Length: 384
Image 1: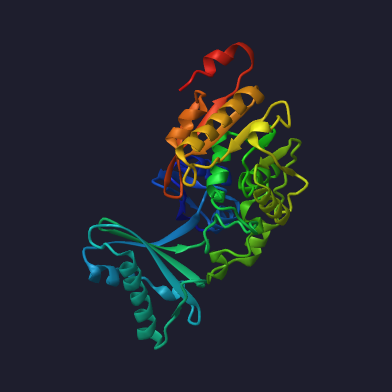
Image 2: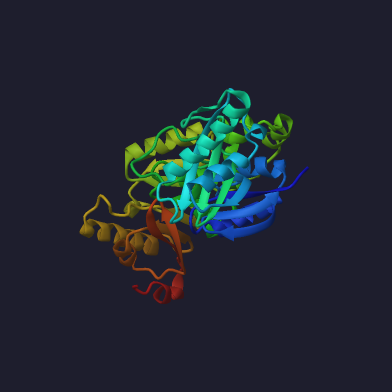
């Protein structure tokens, strides 16, 4: 099978985890970039990347690269590509652009010029043109313009890969599925220990943890991928990947709780839709009153950041989290993400590790607290 280059897009801070995932898939020449990882592989690698990667947002297949000095260069470069190799008449297209260049300030203009080049090429050759469908196109085309370098790629994913397909309802600020999976993988959790999320919201971290523990690929719940509409789609190969045996045994427990009965109902609905009800327990409970559901394990949680809380109540909330971890969860390892500096200061525990991640546009600190018993208390629980 022919090898070619691909790009897996992700969030800042997750590039290393994504590179590790790609290595396990058998990808070659893996290189970390900014919010992306480039790699080489075959059509099988492309299908597996979409189906199996937990921390990728989309998988792009570059088909052309050229220098651009003005709008005419952009149009001419896009028109030089033989689009009949990728787009069939009667099929719809959409062009998305990411622009980081002084030449063009408007990404929509870049998308429009590339779309014009494709349409004009078809019109000149066949007197017909493909239609544009921005909502659900057959072929999604990605333009990346950085400085004077333009890369045009086919988007093999279609909808962003964070849209797993298991979510039926959501809370006010649900964590993105790709970020949730990344947080779990960054913690080193691999299903060998018990897992707890005491502020579980819509259940994303619980579901992603169960999928990791049981070996369920994140693409298993999706209805479709972009590459299924490509001219060279190999249905037999994809069926082989889809039906492969990914199952792993999991002896541990995955438990979640939330102070809101509405959030717990939403989490349960999502868990049920993912077919994971027998693997995840969820109850309504205030973190302050929560007793450990097992003797040791890992806690990973995404508390409120304070956008809707007053500063005093935010500090009080994070102080309660710190006190609860310290008093009730010795022997555990706790990971917490937040954009609130005030809140994190109020936890009152010294983090063993600090990583920077982004939840949407919010820069967050992702912190690990080792909760020791006995003599290490005073040393580890020094106020920050």
